[in-house]
Structure formats: C-alpha cells, structure tokens
Amino acid sequence: MAQDLLNTDPTPDKRGYTALGVSLEARAVEPGLYLVATPIGNLGDISLRALETLAAVDCIACEDTRVTRKLAERFGFASPLMAYHEHNSDEALPKIIDRLDRGQSVALVSDAGTPLISDPGYRLVRAVVAAGHNVTALPGASAVLTALALSGLPTDRFFFEGFLPPKQQARQKRIGVLKTIPATLVLFESGPRLAASLADLAAGLGPREAAVCRELTKLHEEIRRTDLSSLAQAYAEGGETRGEIVIVIAPPPDQQTADDDIDEMLRRALARVSVKDAVGEVALATGRARRDVYQRALELSKTTAEGDDSARD
Image 1 (cartoon, rainbow, N blue to C red):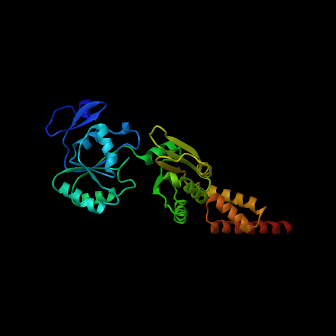
Image 2: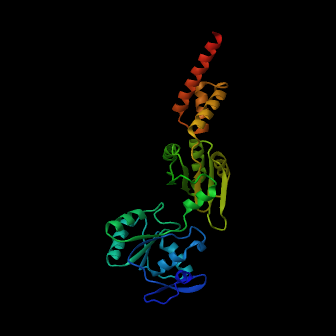
Image 3: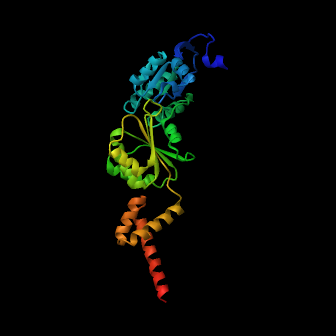
C-alpha cells in the first residue's frame, strides 16, 4: 500500500516530482482529461495522487499559468502548461480536444481548489465527453466545503451562489431570489465589495446567522460568526478584507415560526405607529416582501377589530 502511494517501483516513461523532500517518479497515465484539485492556500494540502498526475500528464490546462508555475516549482514537476480560462476558452478548448484525439493526457486545474467551481471548466468536460474521451476527477481542497464546515451552520443542504452581481440594484434583486431557498447559502465575495454586499444581504435576508471566512487554510485564516447585520457593521467600520473571502448564511427559519414572529413584531409596531410604518419596519427587519407583511397586518387589524366588537357585545 505504502509502496503504491510513493510509487517507487521503476517503470518506463516516468516524469519526476518532489514530495516531502523526496524525489519521486510518476507512472504514465492513461489518455484523457484529469480534473485535479489544488490547494486553496496551504500547499501542504495537495495530495500525492494529484502530484503524481500533474507530473505524468502531457499538458496542464490552467486558469493562470503563473499561479500553476509556482506550484510546479514548489513540487518539482515540469509538465507543459497552457492557459484555459473564461476569456480564451473558445480558442483553447479545441486545442485540448485535439491533444486528446492524438492520445494525450491533459490535467485541468484552477488557481485554487476544485476546478469547475466558479470557472468555465464544465464546458470543457461536456466537450470532452461528447468527443468520447475519458474524464477522471482527483478530489481535494474546496473553499466552498471548507467554509461550510467551519461556519457552524447547517450542512445537510446548501446552495452555492458564487459571486453576487457587483452593481447594487442587480445584487439586491438577486438576494430577493436567494431569500426563499430553504438551504444554507454559500457565496464568494471580493474584499472591496464585502461591506456593501453584507449590508444588502442583511437588508434582504433579515437577521440570519452567518459567517465570513477569510484566507482559509492560510497563516492569517479568520472566521467571523455572528448575524448578518453585525457582520455588515463590522466590515463597514473597517474589518480586514484582504484575501479570498467566502460568506456562509443560515437557511431561512421554519415558515410557521417565522409567521408567528412576524405577527408578534407587527402587534408591537402597530401599537406605536401607523400600518404603513409598521409594515415598512417589519419588512426591513425580516427581509419579507412588503406586500406579504402588509397582507398580514390587514388580517391582524381585522382580527383585532372583530375582537373589540365581540367584547362590546
């Protein structure tokens, strides 16, 4: 078993790599496309199987050749690199298919984590499958799953959104769609937009629990766990936003419990302000649509009036 993992038995057509300071040789791999997960921060998270495959393939298609070259230099493999990303996929995809048609092996990697997550790799996989070639995945690091596990929020059902729209109006509209999804939400965000996105999420989703996960697996890893409003305030006041960021948000509360809470909030608000102001106040606090809160306010007002009439009778 250990011998198989270290791959020390001499066989022809090998390429070298280094693991734990030991120079090793990679066995030849079968033709096909290999989807290889790479570390999201800590380079020690790369697997032996990933290293051997990256050393053995005829070519590595990567999101940014500069990033993958650093990984290659660290672990001593020298497979040729080619760029495959959102902006050149139309040109690069046929070249990869051509290599596979000629019986070669190609590895696909992203800058960090598992390829195809928030990148155009799925187009390549579809094309490779349609062309009749083999596709193999080498699992490993994933920012999505790492953040989900660290968040302390429900993991039995989750929805990965990726990046929210950068413009506020489009972002708020998208958040309106996300608020009804009965699952933990996982999003990516950039540092410069983090505070604004958290503010829109707090306004649109209400006081849900959430976590901001930054620089995962790296030296300055940081996990902030509280509610969306508190997170929005913390980053508006200058919280550290450098590095890669994942936001994890709790699913919406049980619908019946949510309705009971809204009724109680409306009763308190209606005792102080007009129906219009009460509706606006509760809608903002809960993230529920104003029309739904307004309808509930009318029903409560009607029930209250009927109760008063009964008491007079």
